[in-house]
Amino acid sequence: MSRGGEDDALDALDARLLLLLTDEPRLGVLECARRLSVARGTVQARLERLTRRGVLTGFPPRIDLAAMGYGLTAFVILEIAQGRRGEVAERLTQLDEVCEVHATTGQGDLLVRIVARSNEDLQRVIDEMVGVEWVRRTSTSIALSTPVAPRVRPLLERLVRDAETG
Image 1 (cartoon, rainbow, N blue to C red):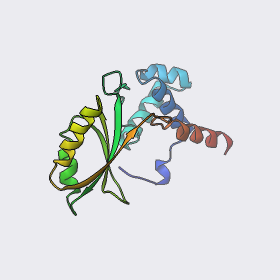
Image 2: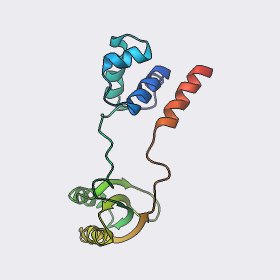
Image 3: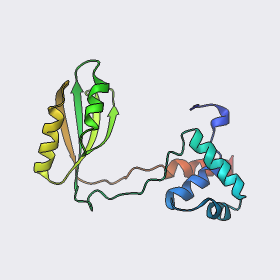
Image 4: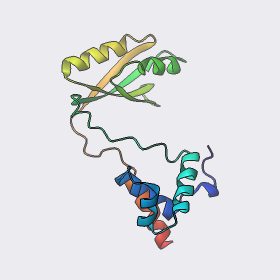
């Protein structure tokens, strides 16, 4: 996957297509073409290019974890033994409650987002994380709310605005 080249720049049509699919991921190519007032082949070609470049990675459903019974979200900073980030990350994938893991700079080595059903369940998950070989220390923060959910819409909208004004 290439990054940063001039040929890699998204244009307003790419951004409008991605906005449309962000709002309605189940839309078909033909309906996207109709709403964007372009040919079906244009939409298909754009989707293939965006997928090939790694910009568009799929169409997963949005799932409310709280509605599934996982109402508690926490972020855990892990300090791990030098040179063992890959092994620890691999072990973390075996814990169902681990939603994402990021390698970080600063105080810790990995930032882990986890979910749990209750405080007791959170303690169990943390105990399992601490039990992973090479984990030296953890620091946990419980999310009280999510005032800004994960988003890409503002970046796509800026791209459309910039294309229209520039």
